Image (cartoon, rainbow, N blue to C red; front, top):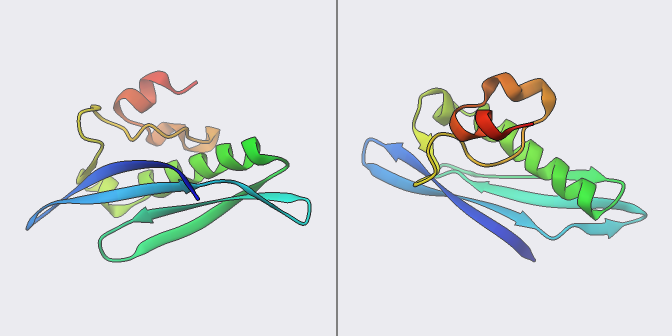
Length: 111
């Protein structure tokens, strides 16, 4: 079950395209927790998951993986990906090792 969706925008030569980011409810499997997510890039949907000791850790780690995927994308490097109405950044927490990549509000509010 989807527990949250954020829609980013990708600027293309033919116009703006929505890029939905969906986070699914963490589920327990054999004593471990998994939290799936998808990023709806126009050319192919990226599906991945993060595991954790409990549901909250799995959710937090999934959000950090989303940040890494977004900030590591060609669309970000080329300045074509944005979160409409929110200024620069995408609003996902970044793992400590990637904080130098943050821009805008993400850089300002990341602790």
